[in-house]
Length: 343
Image 1 (cartoon, one colour):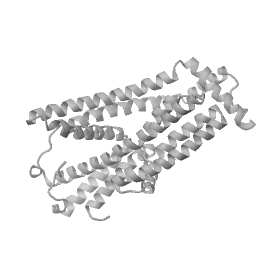
Image 2 (cartoon, rainbow, N blue to C red):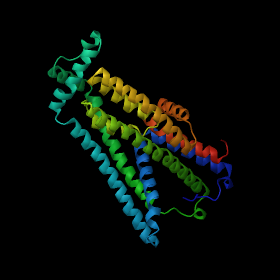
Image 3 (cartoon, one colour):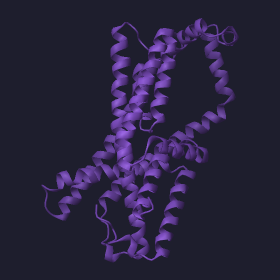
Image 4 (tube, rainbow, N blue to C red):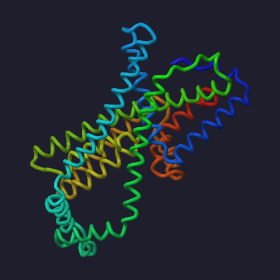
């Protein structure tokens, strides 16, 4: 993608600083008002369309034909992502299955295993039967009914924001950018800021997708291949594989989250399986660190500890959305500092 301006340094310092301030304010406001899912969804569709167009555009002549290609690709990308979301929801539903069987065949056995391995002071607080477990869950849900209702509304709002972001990303990819000579100086500077943000998103997300796919492959081999061959079946194994991919999109900490869940699930089967899962966690964590250094680090020229510091600061300021935004924001910040020859 060509730069919207011939050279950034040809702009006056006032215009450059104004574009930086407006971009920084917009990025922080997006996290603050909970529009980060829409931004990420839009950037994802935009980058996918931009990556696909050159492959097909060479065979089709004419601007009109190219617009048709972009429109079709945008519609396909949006449709596939929506199907992916719905497929993940369907998988979780099929994995949980009948709620009655969930109580009897999955949750209660976990409690019984915990009784055998936890100290007596903790065992006394565990339910004695399926009915006690169900009553306790209902009572907990009643006490936190307002919180659960708000969480449900929040999930629906996030889903709607994602859908809107997907559509907006396809629309932006379809639109044609005005030539640089037709832009005002501030518009051109802001366009360059957006271009570098999209590049930072591309470098982080597509590199992290590779890492997550590798981690998910090893997790699937461990949970769905190695353990079943040994006659060991970990509860919710398929769900854990899906969760591994989803949280694996978070650099560094995503692998720790998924493998901690795997270790807990392994402990529910036996202490030996829990230890094996813990060893698996350590090995995959080392692989994750190596992959981050080689893939993500080379993309944005940042070490793993730099990403961890950025994620820690953003989490302290904005919570979980800050953790998700931190790698992309940090990569964008580094690209701007390098462009100004400050790094």
